[in-house]
Image 1 (cartoon, rainbow, N blue to C red):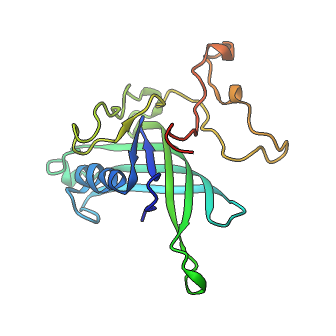
Image 2: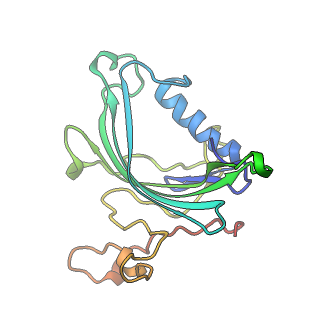
Length: 217
């Protein structure tokens, strides 16, 4: 499904999975093995409902590149009948996040083929999680552990570890790829930061960024 372009990647949980092989390692390796034991489809009693909403898509003038901001809301977990057979055991959780993605049209071939839109650079910021029973006020720290090793040291690991990380209760705003619809200006970086209540913004963590890897333009 993803682009064949060598600069394609997925940014997720403080890491990047790069190129077609890296992206496959994430989806058809890490996720597929963990959730459905390698099956290319659902397994009985495991829920992973990943709704995509409020999408804003901007196509570049070239007609071959596009950007999209999409909000995700996930409800996930196991039915009590599979608690003893699924590695997740008893699990019910919520997840909220924002995608800031880039897409590319590939395969244009004269008049007979118009090309196919494919995911190019996927950036998913899963910024909050909550156990169903206790809610987001009591989310445990490090709810989803950050990857600590890269491929091939970790056979299902990312190709690159990056410094940019966020998880609840971090409430920094994911940067927008487009300007403010009223002012026509990009949102100021300080307005994306999240200081402690009543504290100066200068004390807060740096803003998140949509910057490309150093070896890409």
